[in-house]
Image (cartoon, rainbow, N blue to C red; front, side, top):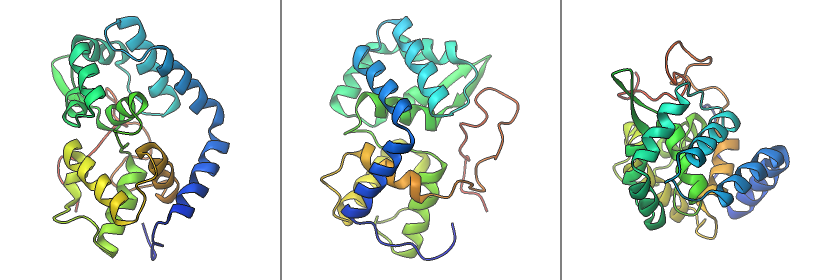
Length: 213
């Protein structure tokens, strides 16, 4: 991300929410209705429907949908309890899925799945959010000891999101509302994330193992 970033304000977040909702009205309403109808994760059919919907409408490009759904369902009671409590540690557990003997980390998907269950408790990570928060931190630090790889560890990412919200006086907004602002502020193309899906399971739901050079 290039150029000087403007400081976030409540007015800018409200404007971003209005724009995002106009541009994504059908998809947002469809997901909201689905998650209201099936809030729990103890029925595999319902989990699969939610996984498919988030993957399709939020473009996370996970191909092993049935495997991911079964993984979430196998921890269904724990997932539901953690969602209710707002426990950030559950996101990393949802994200790490073994497919054909290899553990994949569907991090962006997991944050979105958690957010749709509890939008007031779970901020969303994606490449645009990454780009904006890291650029803002470099321009004017708002979170102490914030290193780029912390964005890829959900409890640390959650702490960073809270610091961002508090520093800029955005406590009146849910994480879901703040995500709409971050999404629109972030660049559409970020060098750390491939422009096109790569071969493999969920290749586009990618984050580096360490901060890229």
